[in-house]
Image 1 (cartoon, rainbow, N blue to C red):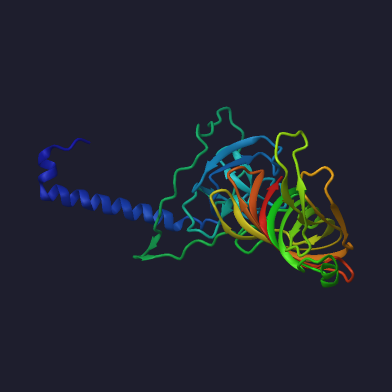
Image 2: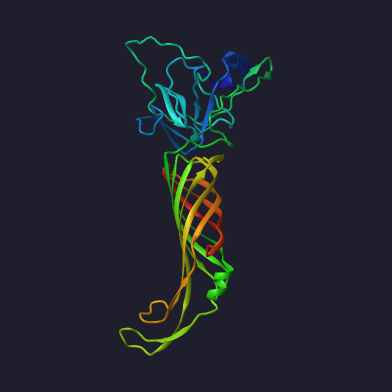
Length: 364
């Protein structure tokens, strides 16, 4: 229908057009109102999510979604076909059938967008000669607010199916995670050993850790730590360059106290705190028991025949407790975080206590 300028300026035409628009809006709202309530709308929270044909990252990719894309979470109440179940995965409706996405990429606590046929029971479809191909682009349009009205007032929002993972739930268990850690802290040494070797009984530390977790429950780790207490028995010697070409000069000694340890223990799975563009920020607690070897040396660095004191520091067993904070990155196989722990040594060890804080990198 073509409208000329007179139609646009004529008040009666404007009123008639407004009435037509009002009637069309009421009909659309009534149609939306009588539809069944959406049983499982959700929103993609990661920047890029792949939907697989089976609940496994080894399966083929069926579709891709961008952040903010509305999806429909399926279960047996709204889908009559076969759904595959696996911890950590959600079944969602795709234009060509069913796909599976990790639960940490979906948030159903956000305002649920309108998802086509999300709450309608799946009907058996007779195979026909002509099959409508799926959309060329699997990315869904950004969510838009839709008001459902009945007799002049807004109806209550449709109940949403809450997946296994929301803020306060656990992330899916991973068969293995590798940990690389580096940090600092403070160590307290046995007072008797420190007085015997004439250095302070505490000092700043620098440490590194390698670890492995199995299904986010069992953990084994090894670490190296260097302590730098003040030395009250340092010495000086006159040295010259080994290859010649310089005048004699005085060099001072330095003290190094090191520990090598291995430990094993249990931990909690990562507990989801809040979503980000790449996944969930999460935290976990851990407790370990292990053994450490401790040694100390007082010497002049890079000197061939200078005096060197090897100081006996007894090793021993220890236990530690701590917390890991996991922060996802844009790469699904890499996460970063912070680790804080307290370590207590058994009687007779060269160390008594140690506090560590550092950065961590998790590899899947």
